[in-house]
Image 1 (cartoon, rainbow, N blue to C red):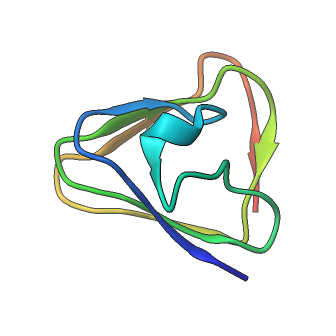
Image 2: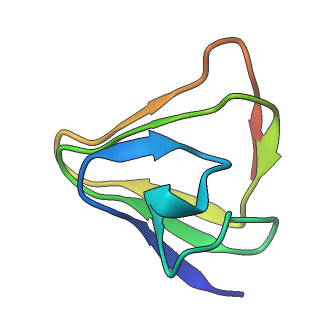
Length: 67
């Protein structure tokens, strides 16, 4: 299980540039979307848990996030 935070500005879930450390979150990872960041699901994804701080956003676009 890895703790993964969004990087300032956000981006697509499956883009390593959206995350610190630079890896796409997978099942079991603890994901935090930081305040002000928007992360967009471009396909169905999985994670162990997701925390959205302050004004952070997770946009599904019809895709599913399985926890």
